[in-house]
Image 1 (cartoon, rainbow, N blue to C red):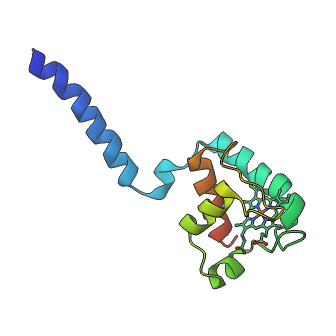
Image 2 (tube, helix red, strand yellow):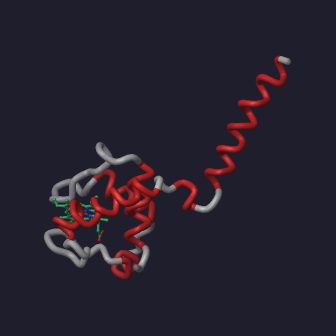
Image 3 (cartoon, rainbow, N blue to C red):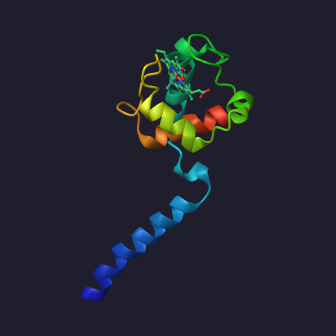
Length: 112
Ligand code: HEC
């Protein structure tokens, strides 16, 4: 009986860990959240980087350019989370979840 009670939570943790290592899509925010983040990307990020992200006050965030600069989901997530001190680029870590930030970073690297 005791054994059964402890095995179930362990099995659940195992399942969750398995899900985490599967395709990236499994970790991404739910569809409505993705729409909100897409809006944020166009309007908030777009206010500095341009509505279509070709650049403005901030540099262009188009996939080709970011790839040329050697950016990865990790490097972009770090910049988005911490901002760039001494510039207009604000840190988004205080208001966005890590998953949200990684989703945005992923979006930026994807050609549309
Ligand atoms: C208030 C203006 C402003 C807003 C809003 C803003 N940025 Fe920036 N961002 C900048 C500036 C300015 C830089 C360039 C910093 C520098 O000189 O290195 C920058 C740099 C970046 C870079 C690094 C680009 C590179 O080529 O290395 C990324 C990525 C980025 N921003 C993403 C975002 C995202 C995503 C958002 C929205 C969640 C956002 N920014 C919102 C001003 C802004």
